Each structure stands twice: as C-alpha cells, then as structure tokens.
Amino acid sequence: APGHRDFIKNMITGTSQADCAVLIIAAGTGEFEAGISKDGQTREHALLAYTLGVKQLIVAINKMDTTKWSEDRFKEIVKETSNFIKKVGYNPKSVAFVPISGFNGDNMIDSSSNCPWYKGWEKETKAGKSSGKTLLDAIDSIEPPTRPTEKPLRLPLQDVYKIGGIGTVPVGRVETGV
Image 1 (cartoon, rainbow, N blue to C red):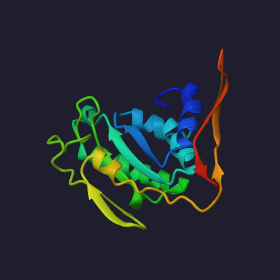
Image 2: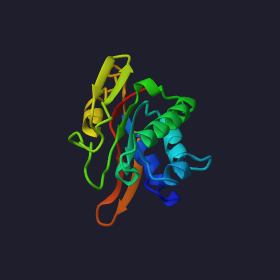
Image 3: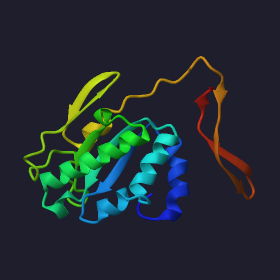
C-alpha cells in the first residue's frame, strides 16, 4: 500500500492471505523517519502484517542509491527497524535485511557492486540458518507454513461480486480448517 492511506484496505485484504511480508523502507533522509514515526505507514504496515498472522518478514531498504549506498545509513535503519519489529512481535534474527535500489535493480536479483561493504543477510529460524545477498535470495528462503491438512475444508471469503448476467460470485481462498 505504497504511500497513501486510502490503500490500507487493499493492503489488509492482500496481507490476510500472505505467508510472508516484504516491508519496503525508503532510505532517503526524512522518508525513513516519516515512515517509522509514531503515525508512520512503515510502523502501521508491520503491525498489521503481524496482527493478520504473517509471521515471516523480509525488510528491503530501498532507494539506497539516494544515500550514495551509505553503510552507516543502512546500519542505522536496520537498528531502528529491528527495535521496532521486535516490539511488534517479530524476531529480528529471523528477518533478512537487504539494501536495494529498485530504480537501478541493485541487489534485487543479482548482487550489486555499489555496496562492497554489504556481505549479505543471515537469518535463523526454527528450520535452521539461511543466508543470501539479494532480495530474490530472501524471497527464496521463505519457509512454507505448515497447514493443518487433517482438519475440515474452509473457504474464507475475501469479497463478493455481483456480475450482471452471471449472478453473485464469492471470491476467497480454499484453506484447511482451524
């Protein structure tokens, strides 16, 4: 739900079905501070994701090119974000923090030469340790959640559409029961 309060409803709808959240944080001076402030959207999104049951988190620190790939800025953001997500309920040791530039594609799929100081991310979960350098590596390290397959089928409805000539169409995701 980038940048606008009107999109929070959409963010909640999508997040309620997610197995992992990717929290994109702007590294620019003032942008990070606004997002992490008391009423900031970075805070709100992390809290909503955890509250909606998304227990896996990846933090991508974007716009690193605007900070000239400052290692100090990256470390500052990692430290502040770690403190906050810990209060929300996430374990910072199980979160991959990746410096990226979406504009240039740095550290998204391939490692970037713009941050020679960045040795990669490392996380530790119940399933063990994993590490990587890029956002794609972090996404590939997501652990599929265990689902109670022995329980009854459920279809939580996400929305209901009334389509002329067809009728009412419920939309949801087939899940095992709780």
